[in-house]
Image (cartoon, rainbow, N blue to C red; front, side, top):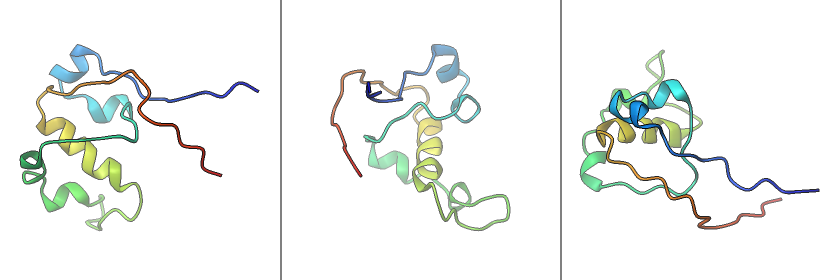
Length: 88
């Protein structure tokens, strides 16, 4: 059996310039880093669903999509493997 490693990929330039991160789906992987200053601009509403409740699951999505949008296209994809996780 051949193991598939990774699923992340780079965003196209048009996706970055038009801030289409949410519409094209998740392309970011597990390792993430960002400037602390960007996190200070995330509002409480960014962390809530359409019923005004805080997201109970997928907190990384709730955090990363606003951060991607706030970065104004200044994001970087690293194609090399950074770690392998063999969780069972």
